[in-house]
Image 1 (cartoon, one colour):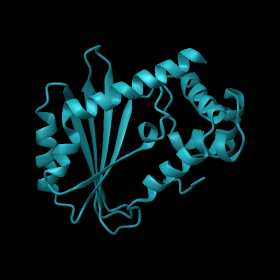
Image 2 (tube, rainbow, N blue to C red; image 1 turned 180 degrees about the vertical axis):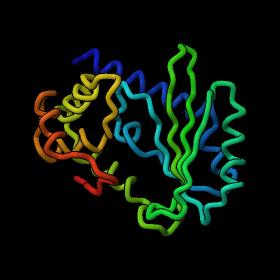
Image 3 (tube, rainbow, N blue to C red; image 1 turned 180 degrees about the horizontal axis):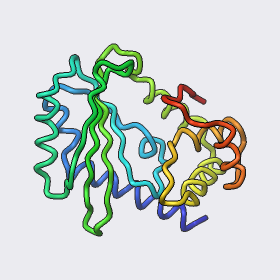
Length: 195
């Protein structure tokens, strides 16, 4: 377990370094956006899946302005590629950006930047979920979640909220229990659960 905690801590430190190195927060702030860290880095539960999640709030979803920000980010030599999804007309009212960064060790990191319209349904929601997860985590449940994330095959994509629900709400403690839990609780769309 000690090695898992060391890996989690090292990855979290590296993620914060990447945020500073790329200037991602300042790039979004340059258009007046409010930038909030969410997800596994915010909760201290970043493990093997190297992703850094931001929710970014703006008064409108100006696509040209959003591309301008991504142009600034893409100018960084560590950025390999980027893609976007126009969800401005969906219930989420967002522009979804993903960029991939290669660190000095050659490892790829994914930066997920969801630009959300201020005043829309999900404004602040996932920040509150992260705060609640932080509030209810114990040393034991943190270790269980990190161990489950570590045990997850690299080829499998599992949303962080699945681990958190399984462990914090339903008492899952082992990989086999987690596999059974996922079969009984298939992920369908946005999960609106908060501990």
